[in-house]
Length: 495
Ligand code: BG6
Image (cartoon, rainbow, N blue to C red):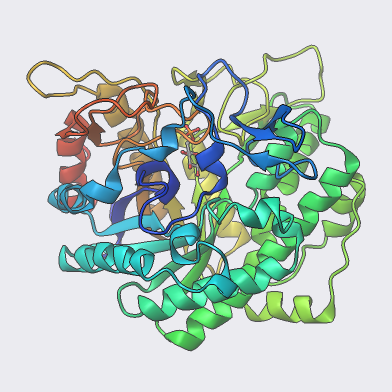
């Protein structure tokens, strides 16, 4: 296996899931700050709102639906795990040192929009937020890690959702472009790798997870995705204007799907699923125009979309420089209602269980071979666009031993198998520029809000349910030492 020189070995963290300090130094609340922690048996996370008459209701994560007059509330005695999370806000220096000790060449991190513009552009820049990230990014540079900066990971100021109607409001395009302009100008030279939207297709995946979605919500979803893709294209152009060396990519949740049987109808179902949940978004951002099947896909969703000449021109002028994607598992599609047990998985997986692969404690199917297939498929589809794997990892229950060690052979096995397959894909000619593993430090699960579902190389001594209890001390897991060899040997030594 020969990974190219300069291959970006590293990991991922995300502001809302790791920082905590949810109301410190001028930051305003984001959607996730209102979301309670649930356990693995529950459906998605939700938050409480209050109506003017004092009655309460709940809003589901990512639904973006708040009844008129409703106001989100923080209730006493409820576990809001993102409020403290892993307390990276107060531990960032030691955390970055640990990542550098592993030999990280890159760190994919996100900037919380709500720290930079807590009350929107009209309210002005929050200098404390700007300085926080400047310090973090400068330290990354000092330690030899290229920051890959993700600008949007579901943590815009909440008033954009409650008062502005979220991404269906086109005014958000300008707000996001201005937020990006501030970040790209303030941090110019500290990074040359930017990602506009994390998993832009997540809206579609959440819709598929929510049985109550009506036609109006579905229509709105496509408008939101369109507005985000236009915003992304404008930020690609802006990134190039600010610094010619900037590479500005898109990021898509991988929803790779096999036909459950050789029945041609199952093959077609798998193709439809991937177009519907993944390719539609990546194709548009990489090729700069909606794909040929867009019309029929929109029609099958009962949706119409007006694309103005100006938007079409923006999409074309702001094609993504690289295609980043997350890969945790794969799924199967079938048209045979009586066949197959339904599979669990990331918000991204709604298919049928694959009898040939194993699964994590949370039921996510483990499929390293599928990563190689995915890389080859994307490389065939986007031959001129470099690929970047951001987010690949396993959520598991880890035990902190009395001597401060954590033995996580399951994580080493999962990552080793995936990296080996990734190496084979590179040897077959895939243009892959890096691999950042999710999540290099334990943090709050997006799906459940637990800490228990740990992904990191670095263990954080915080309560498993996400309540802010524990020493918040950091410990090296066995996988920490293993990944150090991987980074230092440029992927040659997988142990
Ligand atoms: C990805 C998200 O889709 O899945 C991450 O970008 C998330 O934010 C990850 O944490 C794993 O999902 P979960 O629900 O196990 O945290």
